[in-house]
Structure formats: structure tokens, C-alpha cells
Image (cartoon, one colour):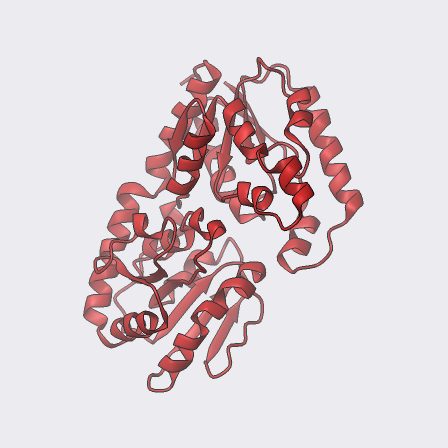
Length: 358
């Protein structure tokens, strides 16, 4: 089976890395030929993460390259695309370059449809508000990273929907050892998401810091300053990600409660749990499907809940350890590439109507 993988970013992009690139080795071992074709380069992604203006010429070059790649796609059994082919362009343009006979699998790990149907400008809502629904109807298979996205695809009339969570390769996530806890509460993400979501938890951290000793550790967010809270910041590197997470005692995932957050796949939680960490997370979107409250950690609704949950895990190291081990077991059973890679292979094979050798 020959697969054209149309990713949005290179391996530097977290969504592309975990939704597509981490499966390439497995697919190739099964005899598949996988050709990768990212839309945006690393410079675009760096600008996006840090809130800088993206180069228009680089964007146009990426679009031109993608159109050329699709024009020469003969010989591929299936197109495996991340979200859409050409962001911010109407579906009609995409349909012109994707032949009706071309088999395609479309992968979604965010509620990207809300970028269009809830856009502040009416012209965007009018031109693009139904685009993702039409993309989903056109696809032979929609792969959804969350229940919210799967429900949207169902309402859109998608022919086939597969729920495939965003998972981890357990070999990259060491199980946290049994050393004494050091009061390290951690968060992993990008500067963009840090600016949006760390303020959600700030009042609780400040209240907690008034009577407990702890350090808030951020990974990948740049230099994080939280007034009244002892902080420690680390650069994200693929080679050290698992080792940094292993130094934590608790992993957190604060979210706002909005339509965009409803579609999030809870990947942070799965990373923490893979390292044997208890978690505390906003009770939003996919999080309740991943974390069983009181078993793997706590799901919270407000600032008082955050303070109580974090305080409990800081004070009761024994229970925190039990929760962390239960989380690791859950990841091993449901949220690892060992489980999802064979499923993805079958999804692509069925869509292509072909069978890989081996």
C-alpha cells in the first residue's frame, strides 16, 4: 500500500508528530510505502507558537507545493491528510484537485470546524462555516481524536468514523520511580497554549503557595512567570521530553470551558499518566473519557477544586503513587501506539482497498 501523508507540519509540530509521524515506522515495517508532505515549514510553526506574523510568501509556497503534490498523486492507494488539504480556502477549491475516485482518510485532533463556523467575521462563517463538514462527508474515513469531533462528523454525514485517541509511544516515557515526592507540579505545551490556559490555574496555584512548598514546572512554554508561585521552565526537546516529565510529581491540564476545548484530545494527560503521574485536569471535553475521577487523579470544575485536588496529592504521597500507577496501566491498555498502530493500519488499508505485504 502506497500512502501519501499530507501533514500540516513537520515533526516539530506536536499534532502532526503524534497523529501521523509516530506511526510511520510501524506502517513501513508492515510493508507500506509512506510519503510525507508537510504543508508548513518549521519557520511558520515557530512564528505561530510565539505569536509572530507568519510569512505570506512561505504560506503561498506551501500551498503551491501541496497542489503540485496532489496533482502528481497517481500511484498512491490512499491520501492520509491532517484536517484539510488547503486551510482557509473553500471546499470547492479542494474538491477540484481531489478527484472523486481518490481514496482519502481525514484525521482530526482539534475542533477545527470552530475556526470557521464561530469566526468573528461573517464572511468567513459564510464562505467556510460548512467546509469541514463537507470535507468529512467527502472522506472515505474520518479519524477523530475525541468524542466531540466524532459526534460532529456523525452529524455532518461522514460515511465512516473511527475514534482513535492521540496516544504515546511508551518506550519514550519512563515510569516514574518511587523516589520521595519533591512537590513538583508540571505542565507541558507550547508558548501559545501556555498564554491561553495557564491563567486558568494561576489563582489556585497562588492560594496553594500561601501554605505549601511546591514548584510549578513548565515544559515547552518558554519563560513562564506566575506571580507568587515558584516556577521552573524547560525547553521542549523530543530527546528529553520523557525524562523531564519523569521528574514531576503531578501533571496538570487546565482548560477553559469553550467549544474549542470540547474537541481537545487530552494528550497532556496521557503523557503524564504514561510516566506514572497522578493528574488534575479541568472537567472539560475528552478529559473525563481519559481520567477516572479518584482513580487516576482528579477532574475539577473551579478554583476551590483545583486547590483541594492539588493539595491532596501533595499531602498524600501514597495515594498519589497508587493513582499514578493506575494511570500508567490505563495508558498501556488503551492509549499507546502498541494498541493504536494496528488499528490505524487497518483503517488505512480498508480505505485504500489494498493490503500491505508482510
